[in-house]
Image (cartoon, rainbow, N blue to C red):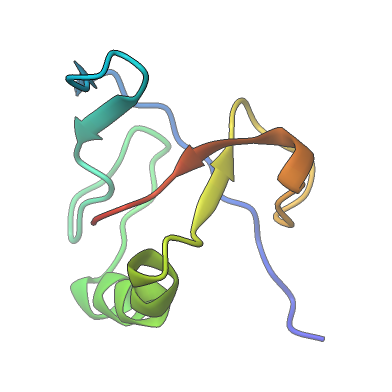
Length: 89
């Protein structure tokens, strides 16, 4: 079994966009940055972020990359707690 690390970060530089049908909301902002120290003091190489985005592209295209609100205790997504669908990075 592959060992997975849960990494979380908070960001306030986002836009909340309401859809025309007033049913859906979209959060738009910077997902991650390369070669810059983030608010948690981490810095990711561009090659690392590119590799991970490429690894997740199929899930994004299939609309199956989900997230939970807050900071779950596990990196495994609990489908009962899904609050976010990542549609594009």
